[in-house]
Structures are given as structure tokens and as C-alpha cells.
Length: 231
Image (spheres, rainbow, N blue to C red):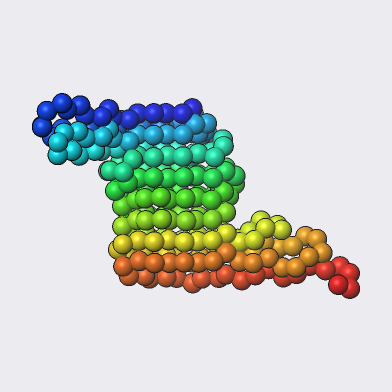
């Protein structure tokens, strides 16, 4: 799929009446052949339109974005449902998410659900969540980094967030901020292995901030130096 824009229009008001903006359109993708794959070749935007009036009306709800099969990123991608409601859902257990590229997600007050493995075949670049209601991670999550700027709750219990660096690359940071309960399974941010004569590499920092925090095991170790000479 190429770029998709399904945004609601802004309200129009030349009097004192409060008028809400239009809702964004829902986007649902399903692949149906024997090895179903959805390839994202463009960004997706489903934000609601702005309100209008002397007392400005509400912004329209964003449209839900739902993937019913495995997703592959063709390049760095952004998916946004705007600042209001509008979920982003990788729906089925086989709705895996792969591709060595970054992914930016903005769901406003909508929820984000990862029901399939993230980066199980090809680890993603940094996955950035700018805003969300609840964020549920229901499978393994390898990525270069995971910054979550703001969410109501976050839950990855029972699954590992792994930002271990690739060869000769430092580990990626995991930074998650919630207003409510923050629950994680294992987090691993180890520095990548050295393949040439050089110093070891740093692990990524882990920063967890929530109304309450329930954290699983955290491994954030630097990698060993590599030396085949006397240095």
C-alpha cells in the first residue's frame, strides 16, 4: 500500500455556533493469498478535522487503522490517527511486523495493540510511540530502540523487549512514560558484539516512568571488547 490519507474535514462556522470537526476514515488491510503479507510503501494518516465556532467544537475522532495480516515496512513509516480517539491495531497473532526501518505511531487517546511478533524475522529500527491510550505488547518485540513519549497504560508482561545492538552497534534505549500503570516483561538492551579490534559497546539506557511501575527482569550490559593483538 502506498500513502493513505483519510482525514476528516474541519468544521466551518461564521456565527457563534459550536461545530465539531469531521471524523477520520477507518483503514483496514487484509491480504488473502497463501502467504499473506501487507507491504507499507507509504505513510497512513486518519486524523479528525478541527472544530470551529466562538467556543471551538471538538476535533473529530481519528479513524482506526487495522492490519489483519503480516506487515512489512518498505521504508521508514509513520502512522497517525491524530490527537483524539483512533486505534492502531496489528490484529491477529500472525500480524507480525518486520522491516529494518523506523516506525512512528501516534494514536492520540486511541489504543495501540501489537498482537503479533514485532521484528521476529527482521528487527525494526526505532519504534517511536508519540501518544496513545493503552499500549499492549502481546509478543516478542525486537527493535533498535523503543521511546514511548506518553500513554495511559503500557503492558508487555510475559514478553521481551529487546534492543540489543547489532554487531558493532551500541544497544538501543527503552524509555516509556505512562500516566497510569506501566507493566513490562523482560527488557534487554545489551551492547552489540564487537567484530574488530576495539572497545566494547554500551548498553542502551532503560527509563520507566508511570503512575505505578511493575518491571520484569532488566539486562543492560555492555559488550566485551574484542582484541586479536596485544592492545
